[in-house]
Image (cartoon, rainbow, N blue to C red; front, side, top):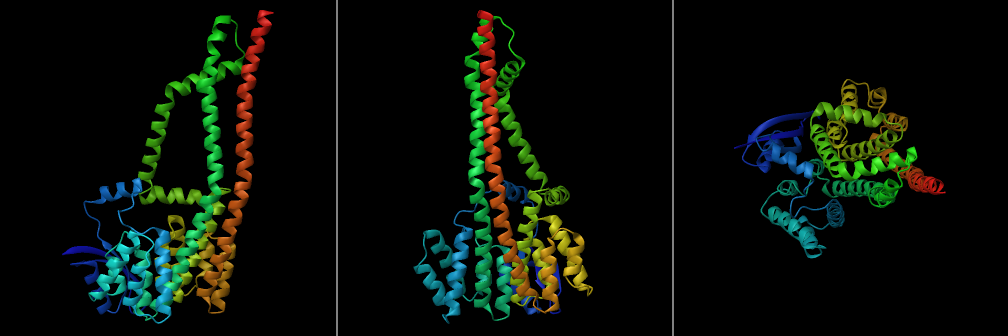
Length: 409
């Protein structure tokens, strides 16, 4: 019997957590359902394999055969369309197997179909492939499966995945050019200091003249970069790894997330992204029939920011005490005022789910505009800094050469 840590919504709509022994995740889910609870998440309880799991997270390895985010969104959308058209689950899964774009998707969906044909619910079959189907995804689907709205839940999940993927893709695509430009600038400067400048050093030494101070500084910088550059890169890589390991612990991660949200430019962008994810996840859960307090408990795990999760936890306690959601959430000061206003309007009109989704759409658009403005500032800034640095190096060389000419004259 293995120990499992679970998250579920009980009969009264309260989110409960606990650890229970069961032979498998499917058995645990079935036991919780017999108790009248809706399972949201189930995972093995922490054991001695923590170091391996931590290294796996740090290195960023994707398990062999796991579905990519885009593939998961496509499978979810096609399955929602098939079930919404009245097709039974087995036939829909067979269609997905026959039309799979690659062997990875075909194998994953085929395993799903085999488990479903063996009598397992769809969510239990997905739980057998945790590398392809995230726990939050399965938890949302379980709520719809228990309420008999599987097709509608899949449709909302597909929309959630597509919007998150589109938002992340727009941010990555916008930052590619500034990143390439910055790497080119650093490489050009390093090349000038370590390869071009040393060609002039013997000439300067043979003249015996005292070089101008800027030229001396550049020569010293080039020598230091050539001598200590590899060690500096190794030290930087080690520092990054140590920082990432430290961020796996709650207290350092909380401090880092709070600092991130308070930064002048990046902090505003991070708050907009967090608000978009909050609204999209909360709205999807509420429309799937999950009670507000339980939905907020699930949203805490989906935000990806501990400071934001603490703010949502504060709002959940306020909502449980009858204070509503918008007021306690606004007291934290971490979410944009627009989010709080739209949630308050949703509460007043008894349309909190749709209004949360509307807030998510607005914040996603704000993120796209903010990224465009940020890129519009970064590109000229990197270009100016690169031009100034190269011009400074060339000017220092010319100044030294002119001083040699004056000495020869």
